[in-house]
Length: 88
Image (tube, rainbow, N blue to C red):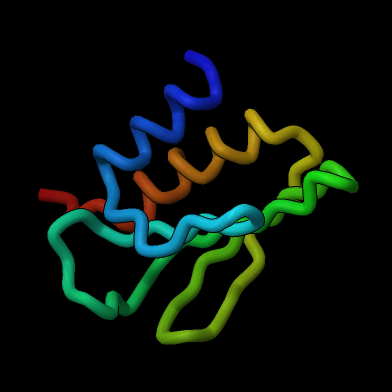
């Protein structure tokens, strides 16, 4: 799966609440307008620096840093799946 495929998968499984040139934030699909927990990935493509954060009640917790765009997008999907999906 290529990078655009991962982003398409993220958009179908989660609600993308912010997507700009240097940031993407996702929340649970079908959740409230202001979710308690979101996952954020920031991009600094000039330095190949990508940071993954968990944001709980507005407070950011750094999860990891990546130097590869593909791996950072994959990590965004996997971490979001782990943190945001409701388990039955």
